[in-house]
Image (cartoon, rainbow, N blue to C red; front, side):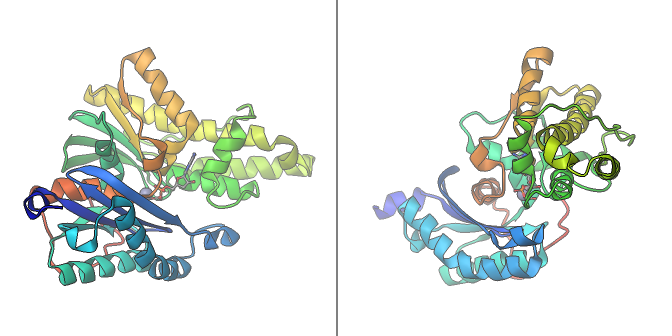
Length: 340
Ligand code: KG4
Ligand code: ZN
């Protein structure tokens, strides 16, 4: 590449290691040119992510994934103009691997560092698409660790209007799946099995104020319902697995959609997006799409590849901070409970 062109070209290397996915992406002038993820499988035997195993796996995977991302982007490491990384929230040991790697590489290459908030990155995944939402918009961010309704008024201006007071939506599905004997993470398995089932079992809606969410009551009623039903019929789960999946999925999505409707009513904003791992859920995607036809909402549903954890979203979030000169110093540390 000619030197003059190279000087104009902004290549950002992005690193995501907040949980159990090691992700590396390359962003060129705000566009994703490579996005590589290694999903750790060691946790499936334990019914949840084991933090120590996750961080050890990140240390093994990070260099090969960086090499793959550079190779798929067809650039060399010396072309990189800046490094974006997830600083938090997430698991301390996992974050530490990505943060330390990013710092070491930034020092070696003498390029700026940009710290990224994981949930902000999930929302910013929309700006990796051809048709991003216009400001202001509401975003329901739903993952394994978070459930929030966020008002976005600019790339870096956001306000959390409501969030869960206990479990996250993805966590509720994962825990319900565990009760059904499904592997971790159960969210995508429930989604799959629910396609052949009917939501014939109903559970009470939680009564939490304003735009906040609660899923722990649903978890408990699901547990008691299973316990009582198994007492009557020991094969209840096996005989009703698809219907149970459809029912718990419907209950979670009803809670999410009811709060989203309240947020639209309260703010008068009808541009609505979803983000995070649970935005891959087919019922949530359908329910939001229906709001376009039934209520005239302008809806934004991320492509499947950008729903669950990935580094492309970190790179996009980092890009918008980079062009504003919002860099951080080498003293930056992982922030497991990073605030917005
Ligand atoms: O955003 P993410 O990849 O990681 C976190 O930041 O937590 O989200 C992971 C969560 C898990 O709880 C997983 O079960 C859920 O997203 N998930 C789904 C689906 N795909 C992933 N939940 C429901 N339906 C899906 N298709
Ligand atoms: Zn996430």
